[in-house]
Image (cartoon, rainbow, N blue to C red):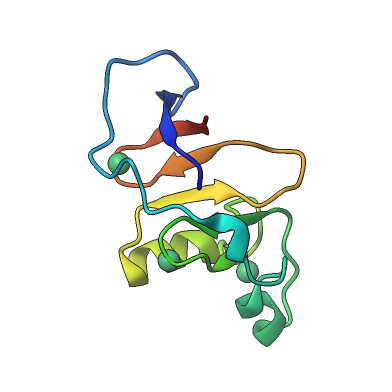
Length: 103
Ligand SMILES: [Zn+2]
Ligand SMILES: [Zn+2]
Ligand SMILES: [Zn+2]
């Protein structure tokens, strides 16, 4: 289980802002396969993958043509996600527009 904290604002600068959605119920070890199922259905291709920190669903990032992670946030109202890229350790709160880091 990872403890997340606010790392910076949307521009990556230090901030006093807090995220009321933390600490999240975060057990991301149960990640499903590293693929965007919506892209697979639509025949689209993703650039990077993001994982919802509430339900563990994996979807594609905003650089991807269909940005399904943002769609998932809008539809499911799950505010927190993290990068599912193996070499990246950061998260994001859609509501507060804050970058997060896991301790
Ligand atoms: Zn938040
Ligand atoms: Zn997708
Ligand atoms: Zn979710």
